[in-house]
Image (cartoon, rainbow, N blue to C red; front, side, top):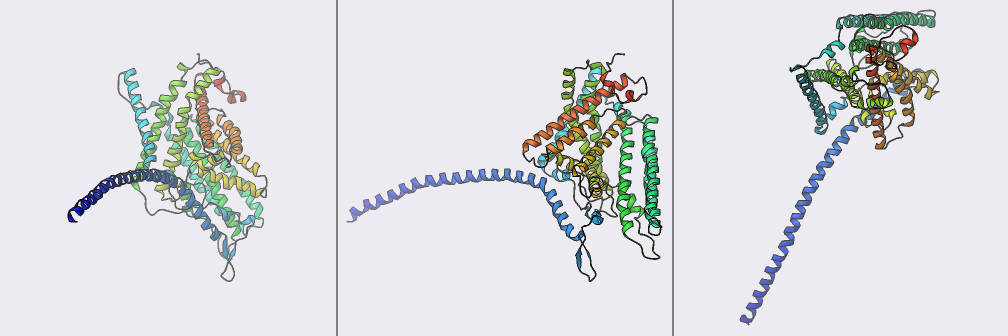
Length: 531
């Protein structure tokens, strides 16, 4: 029995051994598959993480703004009642000022996006392009002149006569600081005790308007024209003129209704805004006046230094774009007789410098310049723009490109128009804001360049209005974002092309008279550069 059972036991053990060998292979293969799936899942999770972070950074700021605004609105709509209870604030037109802009502590969108490595890499790419511009300029100078030197003669020319600009700015600043403020204080001290409140207000408004027209209207134009300031210096004077006008109007517009509503008690003087708050408002990066704003606890001096360096970098960036991409194309030596072919080629050759100028103006002014003053003044609300680059409609683009100016136009143009018309004629209100904005843009460009050529006005008032109604907020497809960028590319190309052609035509074919048609007719239409 034992001899017969031993082979049987050995056979069973051999079977178990073979079975274990056969099963160990699939188990190892299964483990390998699990590890490979785990690695794939980790890679997929990293990709999803990056996409989620990008989307969160783009949308978090807007979501927080909406949440803060919604949380603040219930408190702004409540007012104390007789028995200590809270009652709803009446919704009449007299309480319209209570629904004004709310300032909250928030950083700029690009400051948040630059914390993402992918977005910061795009910023590094633009720096690399600036270095390439420097190297190309050095190479061309060495080949043409046999020396390595960066000459910034065009830059020095554009910012010439800065002494004249300085004293003109001081005159405008001192006037804007003192005259509107003390006029308001004097009017407020007499308003509640004067027999005819309407007459006092009309006379004060007419006198102030006349003085404003002389000092902030005629005086800057006289300085620009009489002293023949170069382009960049012209833009400084004209843009500061517009800024002081908008700031002084906001100050009067926000404080006058408060003085009219709050009747002082006997023996008390009317409450007026402090001069220090108005002085702070003249420098802080907003066009909406408030007695106080959210403030940061300290100044980040490293941030100030980096931002100032970026402003200087943008300045040199613009110089190299002009020297390397615009001057060689439009200078008279390379110009050909005007034809459809040359015009189309010139427009498309101008698209690259045009869109680079657009991005530079946005980054240098709306991000760097405003954040520089915001940091120095500890101004905490840094929402100077929104994610306009993601816009799928021109209506959203106009609202998000320049929030600072948009707020001023919305509260003092669009809403005041609706208030005066009892919330009728919304389309007329929108069109009036577009026309005012187009006129001011064309005025700044016309005075800055020294000639009248309403390219900006035509694009803004005609095509801008048309796109605002056709490409509205209902367009959410990414295709419309592509269309918006294509329109921006083409529009910037048209502006750079036509303004550059007119600039050289004004130099080589000067006016022969001062008649009206001579002043408004573009010289590039008839100039052949043969002299």
